[in-house]
Image (cartoon, rainbow, N blue to C red):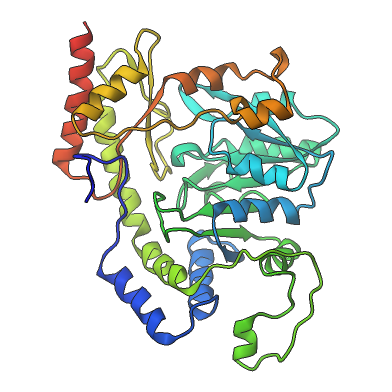
Length: 387
């Protein structure tokens, strides 16, 4: 039983998902097999990309991306700090160093291409971009920067399955324009399998490396041998156990079929929020000029200087409305400060300011009109009573 009148997010599952998982359980084949293959093929077709590999979670996807791009000790990867820590951790797994890049500002919480350009050094090997809240980054500018310096691009699309970037070359789904795209299917994501993720690429060489690294570097898998395609295997590279199971793959197939519908509903709710909250003077809403193509994963707002975030969040909690913060910046976490003590040159002023003032309001496809109105009224009442 959910204790919140309006939760921050909610899992959208129904009879189709239950039937799909039940069918897998009845089949007797639970590890990576035919359902996983179907999910990968459907996801690749959805994105319009050549290769897709289902994995255990989004962090595994990011780690594999770093591994197959051959990142190593001494290398640097440009990445945002205003995101979940998984991306920076994945870089550390390869012994490379994350170099944190500032955001554009409170109007755009995505990585600043200008700040990224300033931080390129002879050790820089890649850029890991995050499409924050489902709003695509400026990929044209990022691709140009990467080509100028011979850098690889990893797209972290955890918030953005189905997001479309309107490039000067035409619209394309995010995850398809870098060297490797990474997706998360965690419980609160637009497409959920509970845990799970996907690694995608158009590069056949990278695809071969991903396929090996996902499952212990083995040349054939259990499902191949079960079908009689092979009777043994070799191990030809370092690998990991990052496989997805059949139950989650079955969930993913159903979830993918409803993704566009659910993203459209998120967009409608976002437009409602923007319309009804636009007259709240002490509240900024990022990405006002970047609505097209977003998956609207979350709805972040930025409070003005005089507003105490804790007071707004406490006020909404009292009314049964759950809120959150996206995100505490990675470079200020204790572990990262021990690795690289902060000095003036390593500060991220826009990131740090936004992180102090950001609040995430509830947003999910099954959010009812009454729930949306309750959030809007509660936010307005808080600011009205402050005067």
